[in-house]
Length: 471
Ligand code: TRP
Image 1 (cartoon, helix red, strand yellow):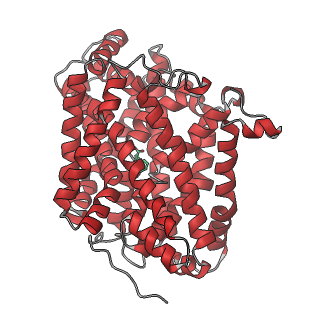
Image 2 (cartoon, rainbow, N blue to C red; image 1 turned 90 degrees about the vertical axis):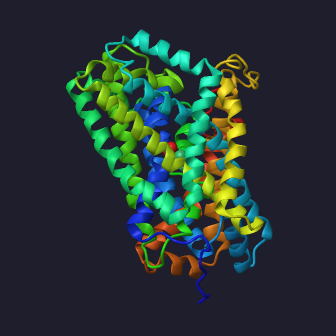
C-alpha cells in the first residue's frame, strides 16, 4: 500500500461538506438556465430521456472516477494526473489531461459569468418592481435591452467575477464550504415553491407532457450529443472540478454513495426547474425553443402576476446567483490550486490572476449578444450556421471538451491505473457494485462517447452504420 498523500490546500470538514460543495458545483445555471432551454430547443421528452440515461450510465460512473483520482492524487488536476501517471508507470503526457481541464474551466467560466451577470441584473430589476404587471412582450423587451447593451453586461459580469475571486481567495474551508452550507438548501426550498406556483397556474400537465413524453422523431444525432454533453456539464464532469474537490475529501468517505447522492440532487433540481418553467411557457403562449433567454423571459411573467411576486422573484434570482456562484468557484479552483502548487503564489494572487484572465475572455460572450449578434463564424458548417461566438464556445466546451475529458478520465482510471488501486480507493469491496462500475467505465462510457461523436461528425453514417446523423 502506498503512503497516503495530503493536500496542501486543506480539506473539507467532512462528508456533508463535500456533498454540499460538489452539489453546489453541480447545481448551477446548467440546471436552471441551460437545461430548460436546450430541452426546449431539442424537442423535449426524447431529449430528456437521453439526458437521464447519460446521467445514469456515464455521469455517475465518471463522477466516481474523478473523485477517486482526485482523492488519490491530492493535488490540482494537472499535478494529480502527473503523480498518478508516474505511479502507474504511464506516459507523463497524461498531465495534459489536467491541463485541458484547466483550459475548459477557463473557457466555460468566461461565458458562465456573463450569464450569471444577467441573473444579478434581474435581482435588481425584480426588487425594483420592474416586472410587476408586465406583459410577455414587455418582459422580452426588458431582456433585449439588457443583452443589447455591452456596457451593462460588462458591469454585471465584472461584479460576478469579483464575487467569485473573493470566495476562491479565501480558501477551501472558510470560503467555499461556508458559502455552500447555506446556499444549497435555500435553493431547493425556493424551487419547490415555484413549482407550486406552476402547478396552480394551469398547463402543468402540458409542461409535464412536453418534458416527459418522448417523441424520437424530434431528436437528431446532434441533439443526442447535446444531451450527453449536458450530462457532463450539469454534473461538472470532464474538466477536473470534481477531481479537485475530491482531492479535499477526507479518507474513508464512500465515493460511490456520495457520487450517487450528488447526481440525484442535481437531476432533481433540473427536473424541478423544468416543471416550473414549461407550464409558464405554455400558459403564456411562449416558444419553448426560445434559446438562452428562456428563463429570463418566462419566469418574470409569473413573478409579475403572483401575489408577493416582488419578494419571490427577487429571492429566486438571488438564489440563481448563488447557484451560479458555487459553480463558478469550482470552475476556477483547478487553475487556482495549480498556480498555488507550481508558481508558489498565495491563493489570493492565484485567484486574481486566474480571475482577471477569465474576465477578459468574457468579452467575447458579451459581444455575441449585441455587436456581434449577426457574426456567425462557422456558418459554412450546417449545424453551426446560426451559432454566435458564445454558442460556439458553449458547444466546444460542453459538447466536445467535457465528453473527451471524461472519456480520457475513464480510460485512465480503468485501463491505466492498477485495478488494485481503484479498488482500494473506492473502498467498497470487490463485489457487484465495484464490478459494475468497472465495466461501465471500462467499456460502456468510452464506447458511448465515441459512438455519439462519430455520429455527429457523420463518420458512422458514411460507413453505413447507425443512420442517425441527419445534417
Ligand atoms: N455544473 C454547473 C452547472 O450546471 C457548471 C459547472 C461547474 C461545470 N463546474 C463545472 C461544468 C465543471 C463543467 C465542468 O451550472
